[in-house]
Length: 518
Image (tube, rainbow, N blue to C red):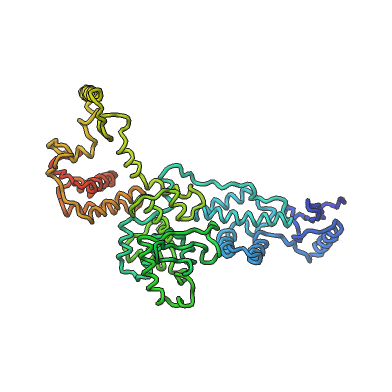
């Protein structure tokens, strides 16, 4: 390598065998032409031409920036046949083109600059979207390395920190689903019937929005003993999201909805010339805009009087299907592996988010298990002669002695909620209670909805608590729990949940018979 006068630039060999020239601009060493050369002689002539033009004041250094390179790189992805290039272009324009370093020379972009950019994105979009944008930018810088414009990729090896979701509440923060009462509201609402049928089919099958939009008539079977759909593709892609074809059975609400939809389909404009089951534009499937449901979905939600809440969008219908099957909301309870196969998840970890919705199965198994004792509580007592009888008598005597020394041991002090139902008379909860109110089916549905909303940490829980209090108060004004809920305060939701559980158990205690406050 020939030593050159100071300030005249450098010629450096690259690992590929080509050569690159560099000059110092604003105390930074940059490639003035943005090109590489096959031989050292070619690079020497290019550098000499650059220096001569700079001395005459006729040459301005052509700095390669992320913006100048990225525009051509995004266009090249379309030429190379990338199916997702429209999405890539949108992500680039929205998030990469707005970065502070977008017009900087590419070799001046550092890792701290990238971390600052990622931090700003995390304050406006979700972690998944941040990851997709990061991968796109990393691929662009990798292409610059291959073109030998920069020596190393500043995004290579960087890891994005994800939110920890070790507890149940964290796993519930980014999705929601429709309760059974809300599903009934949708089916009974006065929105245009085709829109209602779209939503019913969505939460009845659990199909992704793009899969439902891309479903073709040849992939639909509604008659016979095995009604089903074959999910082969998405609307704009000739493949599913996971690349696998799956068979989704049609039953219940989905089967009713699709049969009724096929009666409506001939009246849809353009349906005669389309092979799609749902020949509609994407505006019918629109999700949300600035937190509010819009399009056909928003029209159905408003007609059904379902208040907006975080993450209530078209994808919530897919979550509704999974939640209903895992929890047994529609009847039989499905295993997580079965739900995974139905939804087309790539791993069981994706289906695990619904695992908390099936606590009743553990409760049923616990009720059939004695826990290793023969006291008759929680299981059957074997009758195998005098030994068992003596053991039971001895256990009863020990229990009486324990209660004499510690009043909280055994059955003399029932749980808090049970004590309130027993009341002043001291009669057992299993005995007929004179303070009961017949449970209205609508009241029970409201109570179940409140408990479900509270378990999901839904913002509507407090609103439902007030509605439940008003509904119960109209039936029995003497219930003290109602007054506690009406009074508000930090214990309002706790009192409302106690009231809801009493209603579901079939009893609403007359708290005024006891008198006094807790």
